[in-house]
Image (cartoon, rainbow, N blue to C red):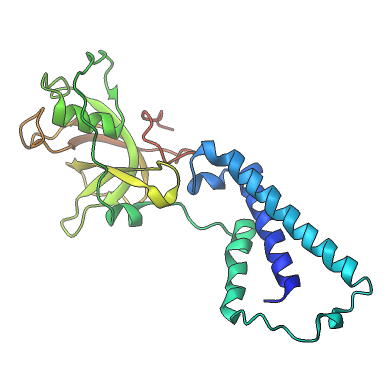
Length: 244
């Protein structure tokens, strides 16, 4: 790859990073919100490097004649290096889709951390819980407080396999998409909606296993499932959204 192409690649990548981090929410498909300043800084640095490379080339060849570069490129860079332009252009023209059911169906569920004590649940009904909190209550709360409560959970649909079942799912970023983990709650009592559909689901714990122990399945008997809009930042396990 010749130096002008390298300069163009740096410039396009820098502009692409600045575009997704400053003018869209697309960056949230790849990293946590707290990393936005680092994306912006990286974009600025790459853009400056690209502009500096172009300026240096113009100083060496003010006539615009590339013939002073000895007429040949001896770097030995393979042609496949030109494929590096594809991700740079995708940041400007077409961002890869967000992680969803395809990823979740092939990932193991995130282990739920042990919690020693549980505060009393509020009297609100349906009770809004995150998928993580619901799982923790089902498998660790010895008071069995969630046993007969109507709860509301939100997430997206992940097919469970050939049996036609499905999970309500959240993908959680620790840092970025590369270290994402999945939290799933099995749904019973209704046919699977289309994969990747975001839902607010109301129901009660599906009795399987001994509630308050690790034998209990994190599962819900569905009473109602309402489609909702995907949140801007979909890669946290936040409290349920208000159905739209």
